[in-house]
Image (cartoon, rainbow, N blue to C red; front, side):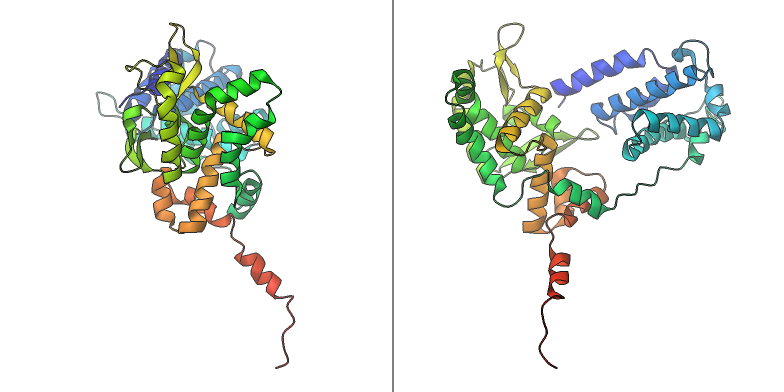
Length: 361
């Protein structure tokens, strides 16, 4: 089920690959069945940064497209670590991001050494310097990351308050501004449905953007999505999300003047280049969440934070990490475990009890 977002990613990917060495394209093609188009595009961006750095360090004098395998094989540990130092400076020492870029390089070099082979059945690389480079040790514990996240997500009764704010209060607060008020009247059912769906399922932004009408199962309350690694999955969502979706769908064709051939679930009010309503873009959804979040008084709230909000609420109410992992589409359960550290007051209550006077023994 190839969607518009994937097509755009592959188009951008092909554009980058034409400037990279042939063996990078071979590696990308090898990974197409296992990684999403978005992940492959990110890998290509990372490789472009790496090969440009090789040229900037005068390790290669021609086009980066012509960088030979022999150069990769002859890189020293000091040179590889120099690239990581360059990344840390460029990224202001963001360890997680540096590790992700290092992971992309490790994967490429591993392919060149242990998977790819010539017609003589010899590996492309006999020496792999990236295998000797260790990931940055991240100092923040899960508790620290969770504490940083907690103030930026919806907790408790904020879920329904935010949804109600979008459906009703935002328009009332902007009644004197006719432009804002009318625009909200036009889109409030759609916007409420988007937020309600994310808060009721934990879907990623890209997954929401690429939903089509026939991806929604109205009887089972599921949405068919393509997750990372091009894996198709049916994701459950809440009854409230379904109610809001039905309200939006009841006005979708007439309000947005949609042709029946347009299968995009969420569409934009603005017309596309051919004068027809187009699929709502990822950036448009990000902007509308930013708009509502700022007006609501939680400017740090974002689409991804809505996903975190769902996961936190799910863990508090259901307390089933394996099921939550599947619901969110995480490849590693360690990623899901972070939500076990949000909204858990057991430690605080235990410490508070120490202050309670005990009776005489």
